[in-house]
Structure formats: structure tokens, C-alpha cells
Amino acid sequence: MDLSLIFSPLLSLASHPVWFTVSVVLLLTVRLQRRGWWRPRDCPVDLTGKTAIVTGANTGIGRYIAQDLAQRNARVILACRSLERGGRAEREIRHRTGNNNVHLRIVDTSSMESVRRFSERIKKEEKRLDILVNNAAASGSQLTITPEGLEQTIATNYLGPFLLTNLLLDLMKCSQNVRIVNISSMIHKRGKIDFRHFNGENLPNSYGAVMYNNTKLMNVLFTLELCNRLRHTGVTVNTVHPGLVLTEIMRNQPLYKRAIFKLIGSFFFKSPEEGAVSTIYCAVSEEMEGVSGKYIDSDCSLTLPCPTARDKALAKKLWDVSESLTGLHKQITEKASRGPIN
Image (tube, rainbow, N blue to C red; front, top):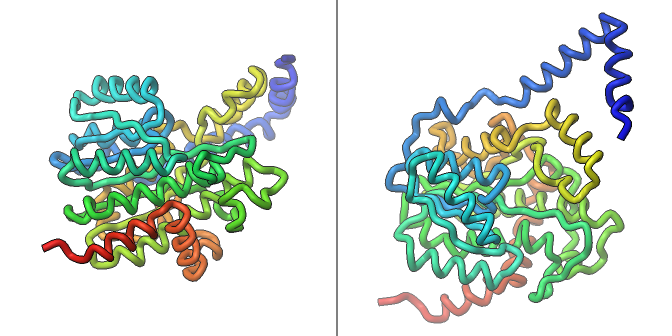
């Protein structure tokens, strides 16, 4: 790669002091704006005696979220797909925090069967669940249909978290001040809901990015309807936009593209640690106690999601379809038919 392609514009700016100064000020301003007004280190909240689950906790912002909760003395369950990467994260978090009450449990959110097995194990092993962070997500570049007949991006990013949350709700209702945090993105504004997509039909040409956007919209709509169903239960649920985060999204690209991405990203994108802040804010801060059904921006401020994400009728329809596709509707019907346990 010819590095002059990157540095020539900078050298040109340097020959014009005024423009160079303006450019440096703009870059520094953007960099400073990556940090919000709330910092985890300034929050004294202790989580001793509480249990938290973080999905996708082996890397990226999920690992830093789990590490912060462990630092606050919570019992932290790393819900990961990979035994190797999850085990490495478990050891690192224990070492960094001195908290040995950090445990790996395997789950693949693209598989509803895996989610059920994970949930059953959690309900057998745990007496309480105080924090659930639905962080795991993926963006597929090629169409993949899971063995259960679901489009994989939707299954991983939305249907799996939907089912997981619902299966663990009874356990969460046993505690007080329980918080669910669903990680979405500002790009939910570009999302659309087409129920044919769930089975891999009528898919758009720019498949990967579009489907990812759509699932982020689903996350916000899920939060809207779940909030309505959780009134007066002591369980709150909110959605978070973590910001533009420098992740491993370019790991499959050529070396020169990764280099450019990191160079630009170091100025304009948040690090995974910075990207975890808004989620940690929702999960532990005193300011968020009792707050539910909200969309939290990357600077830890309340903001409005797009109009589609506030459509209550669409949120209800999405919930009904999701119940059917995940088999949750059948479980609810069977549970109701058995009647109360004496």
C-alpha cells in the first residue's frame, strides 16, 4: 500500500497553517465528544449479592460490560458461543477484577434450542437474576438459514434475545430493581420490518447491512412492547446505542483496508471500553433506577428513537410473530392449560 495516499493530504494541510489548525481542532473535538458526561469509575454502585448475565461477553463491548459488573462484585455469567474464547475472557476478567465469581455458560443465540438449554440451566443453578444484557450480535454477509428455518441474522440478533429474555423473566421477577438492557444502534433508523425476512424470503440485495439494520429496529420495538408487559413487576427494560465502536468488523478484509479502518477509527470511533459505557450506565447507575422503555444514546442521554420504533401496533405484531416463530406461544399456552400449581 502507498502510504502517501494517506499522508499527502495531511502534508498539504500542514502547508496551510489556518486550515491545519482548524482540522486539528475538529479532530480533537470529535475525539473528546466520544466521552459522555457519565463515567463508570465515578459510580459507586456495588453489586454484591446480585447476579448478571451478559451475552457475547467474550470480546468487544460485551467483555468490558462484564468486567465492570465483576469489578462491582456481582456474580457474572458470560453467555458465549465459543468455549475457547469465552474461557479466555472468563480467566482475564477474573484476573483483572479479583472476582472469582465469574462463570462461562455456552449459548448460541441463533439457535432457539440452544437458548432453551441455556435458560433451563440458568433457572436450575441460579436463585436470582438482577441484570440481563442482550449484547450478542452478528452481521452476516451471506444468506444463511438456521436448521430451525430462521434467517440467521434475525435469529442471532433478535429472536434469540427475545426468547432468552422471556424464558428468564420468572427468575428476574424474584428480585427487585431488575434491569434488562437491549443493545441496539442508531442505524435502527434505517431498518424496516418485513415479516417475510424471518424465513429468508424477499431479502434485499445489500443483504448483510440491511438485515443488521432491521434487527436493530426490532430490538427497539421489542423493548417498547416488553416495557408495556412488565409494568408493576419491578423489572425495567431499556435500549442502548453504544456509539460508533472500533470493533473486529473488518477482520476478514485485506490488511491495507484494516489499517485504514483503524487509522480513521482511532479518531472518530470509540474503543470497545468507551462503547460499553452507555450500557453500564443503564445497568447500574442510580439515575436509571425505575426508568423503563427508553432509548439511551451513546452519551448516556435519553433520546427518541425513530418514529417506526415508537409504533406500538407494530411492536405488538412483532411480538406476536416472534412468539410463534420461537415456540414461546406454545409454551405459554401449555403453561396456562396446566393451571396454577397448588
